[in-house]
Length: 242
Image (cartoon, rainbow, N blue to C red; front, side):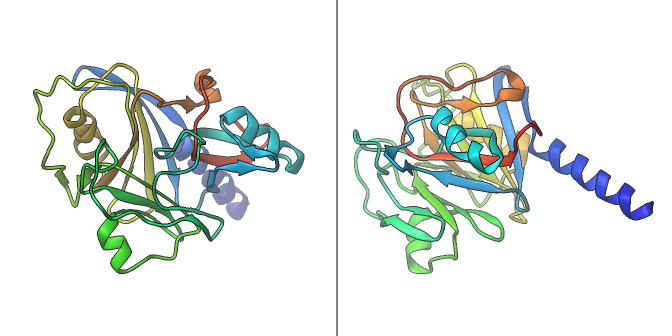
């Protein structure tokens, strides 16, 4: 009986940890989804007939295996053909190499970084990652970094009027928890970064994208429908368990 109760408690804890929730930080609304390092978190790019391009295609591909997406969001910047702009690793295979040069746009606003899914989660500055690559089952490069070892990106300004719907990922100091956040109103980089550091407690956090930001969260009634997207990060769960 004691073992059964412990198992039920563990299952309940996992489901709660992975749940998406709405919250308000510093007067602005966000939705945050949480995953633990023991969860089945994956990146998705291409299906049998080309890029998945959206959450419904990933969900359909998982269905024959008795699986489904618990939540998902776009997971990095992409080219017009939906291919990744930077490093992309899926199921241990590197499909796109890391980019360490600066450049135009948010991706080139160094430092940028890599979100790595291995035995633990990590967000690592790209040049540091290139010097000593980690063992990542899945990895996606994007930019800019939002939080770097507890400090905000040096180019962010609290008074910036560059506002957008934004999404990204932050990781706990012990690598056991990853938070995926999307703003529900346009915000600037400084506010978005402080959400991860000051509200969620992320030591490092990475920006995924802006105007294309999408979240699939069926528990909250969010389908994430919209135009096509490239890399997708999603929590995989048994069908019917969300």
